[in-house]
Structures are given as structure tokens and as C-alpha cells.
Image 1: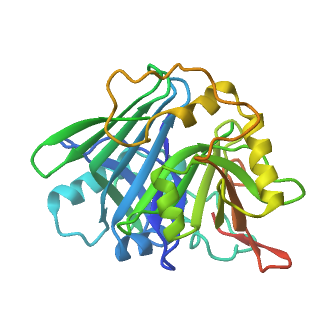
Image 2: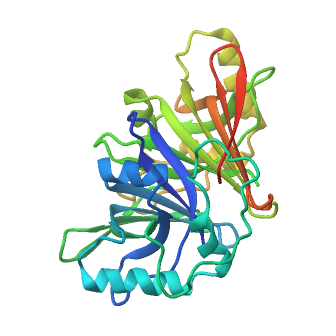
Length: 170
Length: 170
């Protein structure tokens, strides 16, 4: 189950929420990888306020993870070579169908009539300029087990050096 | 699939997000019903800012609904008799297990050792004072069909009298 819900604060100060696809972890780190289009609404929101709360519900095991932390956008002009390389690798790991979405017209804008969606997929090696890698560095994780005795709820917080765990009432 | 993710803005201004259970619609209205505990963190957040964004993903049909709007909390001191009656009916429709959760210790507080969770279920007719009905009155609904041609994305907005629909790029 790779679908999680990512909340941000909208430009109007109200919450925003959408489903995104978890793309694995950044090598040797706790950072979760997602991808997004530089033209999407959430990119403007993240530029304004980089904090997020991601909610991950596993229906089969009845477990919920709530991950809060700071987001980092890695766009085509990012000068960090490690992150730029991670951006390219993430692009390369996408399916053709996923890569093709980045060739579509501006997401969220009024629909363009007769737009050709099924064009040739873009170069699988070189990311398109509007392709962004999105990293979440969590500093708070809440884990709820609904199948506990009767339920278990634990909050993990990171102080920059160590993680601490607190068991709380469900 | 009755589980949806509800985002709010936390007391620190950062987003918050959690899974909640959809409890049907308030009679003769577009308002979605949820329940919550008056002692939960989200109640404090809703008192500060009543806006939410709810994300509902249907894995089988690959559809996503994003509902944004204002939340109304109906607590035990609410003087609106229609809402108070809806609160009681919602309580009565819960399972014993769901009602029993409202007898537990303060949610989110450090876990109480040896607390007896499996006590007698509370009165199925009269809601406990900390039981709140939570209503969402959406004024914006975004519907995404990932199985469209190639995808369909529509935004419905309510101006207080009428709903308008705009087809947008996915």
C-alpha cells in the first residue's frame, strides 16, 4: 500500500490534503521520497510553509502512522549534486506512464480540449525540468495499532540527535 | 471504505492529519458526519480554525475525492435541538466497542498503567459528555478519476446557493 495522504497549509491558510505515492527512502536516511510537478499547487504551498503531516493507514493490519516533518523540494535547478543525482534516479525508476504525466498541460488549470495525452513518453534518463523530487524528513511519528490491547499508541519524536518514544493513551 | 484522512491546521500553525471514520450524512443535507472526543487534539485545532480538507481514496476504483469546507462540533452543551438529536442518534448507531472508547483516559496523554479498558460499555442511548458529533459542510470537492482518459479531474465549488463544476487538467 504505497498511497499516503499528505497535508499542507494552503496559500489561504486553510488545510490542504491529497493522496501521494510513497517512492521509498532516500539512501541511508530516514527521508521519505515522493515526486511532484513544479507546477502543482502543493509546490507553491511548500514554498510558503515546508511542514507537512502525512497519514498512512494500513487497512489489513489496522495500523496508522502519522509522520510530521519538513519537506524539501529538489527541482531541476537544485545545486546539491547528491540530491540532483537522487532526483535523476527517482525519475529513472518511474514507469513510462508516470513520466508521461510530466508532459501534460498545467495540472489544475482549466482542461485543454483535445489535448493529446498519449504522446511519446519522455526520455527515461533525463528528468523533465518540471519534475521535482520531494523529501520528507520526519521529526515526529505517531503509531497507532487498532489491534492492540485494546489499542497501542506511541509517539516518537526526534530532537535532532536522538529519537524518544512515549506511550500514550489511544 | 469508510476511512478518510482529515487535515487541520495545528495549534503551532503546522498541518495535522489523521484517519477518521465516515459515519454517513446528516439527514437531508450535504454534511458528512464524523465523531470525536472533546478531549482530542483535533477539537482544540477546530476551535482555533474550523476549516478542514478531507481526502478520500478509493483503491478499487482508483478515485480520489478531496473535500474542503467548514467543520461544526456538536458537543453536549450545544443548544441546537436538531443537532443535539443528531448527536444522540449518531451515538446510538455506534458499536459498543466504539462507545467504550469514550470511557478511556485522556487520548494522547501519557499512557496510564494498568488502566482497565474492557469495562462495561456505556449507556447506548445517552451520549457521554465528551462525545462530539463532527459535521463537515463541504464548499469545494475535487474528484479525480485515475482510470479516466487518461485521467479526469473535476472541481465542484459551492457559492452558498449553487454548485458549479470546472473540468481541469489532471
